Length: 156
Image (cartoon, rainbow, N blue to C red; front, side, top):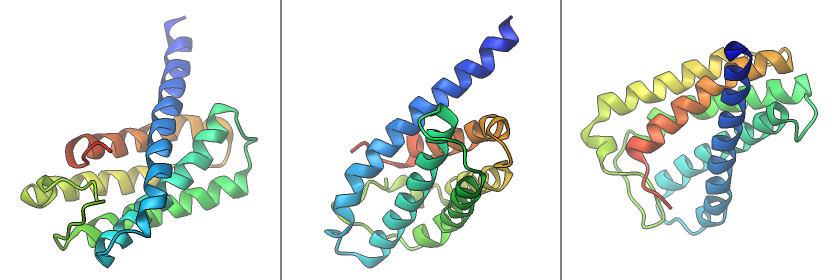
């Protein structure tokens, strides 16, 4: 019985966390056009792309949208692209009052790069062939995103 409840709890938790991330992304969306530094603007757009794709997948995973394999594959591609942009867009230390990037990113660059790599690996491992495969593989990506955000992103 415990085995049956654990995946269900993990899925609910993953959906809840993704909703929190998506809410933060919506708040950030209106700010991007106000960002003066183009490097910061580019990395915020990459994070927004990831959040949009994540929202698509969590909606499917949580039953708020029907599972659509083609849309899920497209969201996976977006996540692979966005996670691949993390290190390049953060390489140069740039700031903006609307940025939520903590200065610890550049002080702990090796750790940050490792977390970005973990997120990209999780995005590549996403299995979008079926809803059950998505439910099995998406939580590790959500976890990778949250781990990095806890360490390197200031609250809104």
